[in-house]
Amino acid sequence: MMIGIDFGTTNSGAAIYTPQGPQMIETVEGKDTMPSAVAQTETGFVTGHAALRQQNENPDYTFKAVKRFLGVDYSDDEHGHFQMAEGPDGKVWWKGRSGLISGPQLVAEVLKSVLRAAEFRFGKRPTGAVIGVPVDFREPQREALKAGAMLAGIQDVHLFEEPYAAALAFALDRQEFSRVAVYDLGGGTFDITILAMKDGVSSVKGMNGIGFLGGADFDRRLVDYCADQFFKDEGEDLKSKPHCMVHLNREAEDTKIALSSDTEGRVYLENLTVGADGFKSMNYSVSRDEFVQMTKDLVVRTMAAVEDALKQAKMNARDIDHVLLVGGQSRMPLIHDVLAAKFGTQKLVMGPKPEYAVALGTALRAAEIEGRIKPGVLERIAATTVGLRRSGGVCVPLIPKGSKYPVREAVELKTVHDGQSTVEIVIVQGEAPSAEDNTLVWRSVIDVEALPEGELTLGLVAEADASGALRITVDDKVIYGQEAGS
Figure 1 (spheres, rainbow, N blue to C red):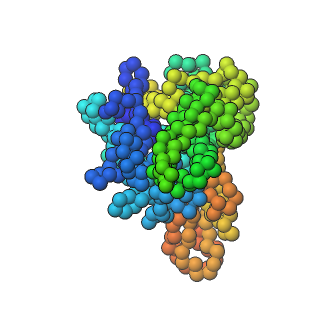
Figure 2 (figure 1 turned 45 degrees about the vertical axis):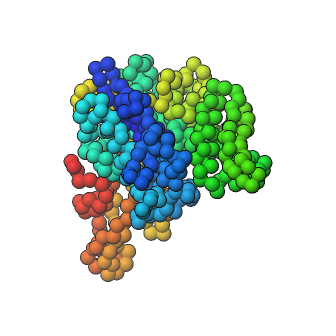
Figure 3 (figure 1 turned 90 degrees about the vertical axis):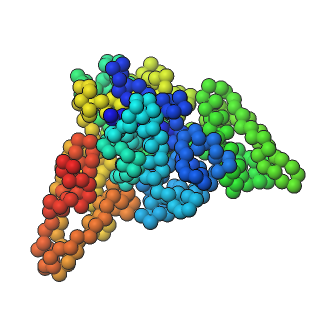
C-alpha cells in the first residue's frame, strides 16, 4: 500500500486514493493532520498533539519546525536556536537528553506516527509513500528526508514537489485550467510555480522558492513585538527564558490565526513570570493593521519571487487564468489583497482546506505510481542549478535552473599539474557564481594515474531522471546518487 504524505514544518498529514478520490487519513486522535512536533521524554519519543501537550514541562526536549533545518549546514546563520548543535556531519542536529539527535531521526518519529494512523485505519502498514517537498529543497535536504523515511520503515520513497501535488489536487474537477500559478505559503517555506495545463499534459514554465519564509516567520514577528514590549514594560527578557517563550509562541500563533477573521486580537498570558514583586502577566492588544505593518515585507518578498517565476515563464499577470492558494499561511487577508491586486480577485482559488492540498495531491501521485489511475503527463524542470566547482572557486553550471527533466550533461576534466595523483570533485547547488556561496551537494577525491599536466582526461556526467533524482558519474563510476535502475 502506498500513501501520500505532506511532511510540513508545522503540521503533517497523509492521504490515500479511494474510488471516491483522494481522502485524508485520520490520525489515531481523529484529526486530519498532526503537529510536526517530536518530544523526547524520559521513557522515549512522543509526537504530534501528545508532544505539544507536554511541552510546558519539557520545553528543552520538545522539537518543532524540524523540516526547516533538515539537512542544513550548522554554519548557516539562519538557525541560532538553543536546542541545536553541530552534528558529526556538519549539519544541524538537536540536543537530546543523552546526546545529539539527527534530523532524519526526528523525521522518522513523525512519519512513524503517520504510518501508525494508516495502519490503524486500514489494517496494514504502508510500505511506500510519495512525500511532498518544497521546490527549493536542495539535495542535502532531500537526502535527509529520504533517510528519515527509510528509518521510519518506508521501503519505497518518492519525493514530489509540493506545487505539482497541489495542482493535481485542485485540478481534479477543474479541467478548464490552462495557465495556473500555484502560490504555496506553508509553515516554513514558500513556493511559486507557473504551470501550463492542456489535454492532460502539465508543464512547468517557471518556478521559484524561498526556503526560510513561512508561517513561522509571521509568528516570530508577533513574538518579537510582544517580547520587546514586555521588556520595556517589565524589564524582563523573555527571550532568555525558554519556558516563557513556549507559551508566547503558542499564544502568538493563535492570535495570528484569529487575525485572519477578526480585526483585533489579544496576546494574553496570565502569570507569565514571577519575581520579587509577584506574578507578571502579558496582556497586549494587536490589531490586524498593526500585524500587517509587522509582516508586509514578508509578503513583498513572496511577490518578488512571483515576478521571477512569471519572468521565467515569459508571462505576465494577465496571462494567468487561476491562482491556487495553498498552505495555511495563505489564509492571511493581506495575501489575498496583494494577489487580488496583481491578478484579479476572480482568479484566486482556495479550497476549504488549503493545507490539505499537498497531501491529497501526493496521494494522487501514489495512485499513479501504483497503476490505480491513469497517470497524467507532468513535465518537470530543475528548480535550482547543479554546478561544478572549477579552478579559482568558480561555479560552472552542469544542469542549469529551468532544464527540463530528464536531462543529461557531460563535461571533460583534465589534470592541471604534472604528476597529479588525485582529482577533487565538488558538486554544488545554487545560482551564485562562486561555488562557496552555493549549497554543497557532494565532495569527493578520486585517485588518478600520475601523468604530465593535461594528459589525463576524465568524463563527468551529471544527469537527473524524470523525477529529478540526481546522479553524478565519473568515467562511468557513480560518485553521487543511485546506480541506474536501482
